[in-house]
Image 1 (cartoon, one colour):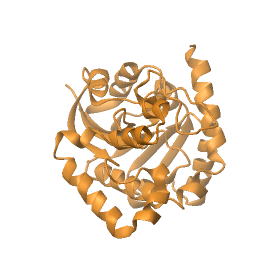
Image 2: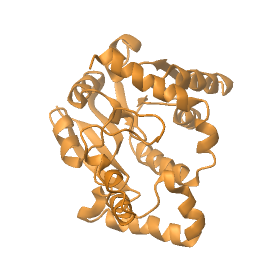
Image 3: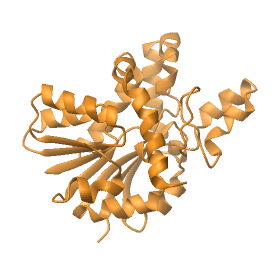
Image 4: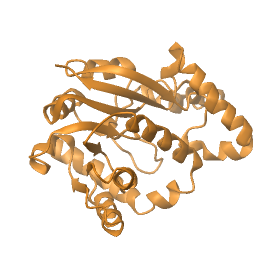
Length: 269
């Protein structure tokens, strides 16, 4: 498929999501807890400027721009509607250290030609919707300073609990959707051409340009963000115990069997 046509489809999908995204997000304690964990990993890195790929409505741009007023924060998103909301949030918060633009990683040379980034982060799998992940790896490396770092999260291919639940409900097609070459996204109404990614695929795509320094899985046993209703059924104590169980499982080979996988990268010399 033509790259421009594909990215237009992705933009249309997220333009539709933009109108209600934050209203849904602020009601979702699971998504908030996972996002905060992502943020803490980013904060553990040292940087003077940082790029967010897939910034959405600007929740994290505003967060980092507020707590790091001396640092430069940049964001891009393929969805004009998302960027419109992010721009409004930045303007209303008077964050002069934050810039945002419409585009994909392949557009960085044109969007911010004067900038070399210390750090790049992606939350909630924005890179699951790029056409060529190896090309994106090369592009990001070319726009970073020597020894630059990244924290990238991906929708994971091997979400074991979700597969088992679907099998027990005799939803065999749903159980193996993530293993297909093309994954339709989360929405049952709107198809999004994307793909779930395994650790092996991540290593292959980024290995020439970056080394992986850390990895962590999310929602291995803890409910996924789209299963918020489980938190009400299970109760806070059980959910907290499942969150802690996930932390323990991250010390085992089961770390990569959850809904999301997070990777920390360092640019190769």
